[in-house]
Image (cartoon, rainbow, N blue to C red; front, side, top):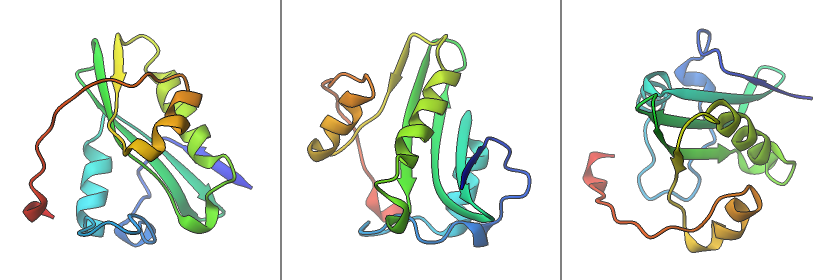
Length: 130
């Protein structure tokens, strides 16, 4: 059974393993935890005591938000966990004007099924930070 929580009080670095598969330079567990704790909204998916997925949102709290990370551990993918995480975090932002995210082209159909629309954007990446 998968449960969903927004409370991070008992979340520890050791809970955040098995994510960022395939990333050339994944964040450390300490960075990962700091990002989640510094986010505007976070939803964590758990199977028993194990964290199996998460989504985070950063926001001005007034009009706009950005979703930088949605991750589900590979062995739990395909079970609707990512969709439920997105549903929950976007529902919490229903009063905002915009919620944006960036993704690889292959993931556009997934996010379109969640009601998102493709946008044109730009960005900078400093991969040496990780």
